[in-house]
Amino acid sequence: MNSILPSRIEAVPTPRMADERTLRMCFSERDAVAASVALSGLTYREIAARMGVSKSLVDLLIRGHRTLTKKRTIPFCHATGTLLVQQYREMERALNEARGRVKEHERIAAIVAPTQKLWSAAA
Image 1 (cartoon, rainbow, N blue to C red):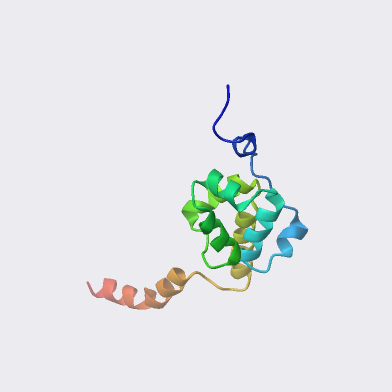
Image 2: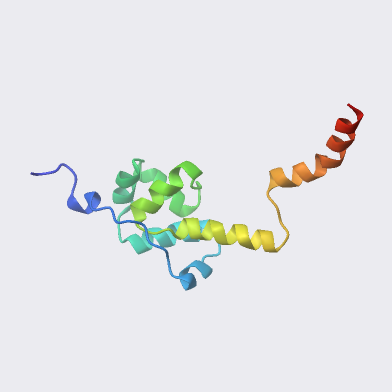
């Protein structure tokens, strides 16, 4: 049975973890995206086809003009066959926690907590 899509696009591998040394050499998420594409050995067009997006979006992601949304991260990892972007995000999260940095919404919650306690006690 002949298929419309080339076999290279149909044979989507299960994403694999990248080597720890590769992960540590990524200084930004953009590096992780570009390295994922390089590891995949695929063209921008092939990655775009696997993700269901345009080739120009893949190009913008690689050049750092757009960031991967949470919604597109999993399709990107499946398209490239590597979990490097997810690994990078997890590493950044752990480093920020170790440095005592928190997410913006957690920081704001800490700021308003004393006033919320005061207001709820008065109610």
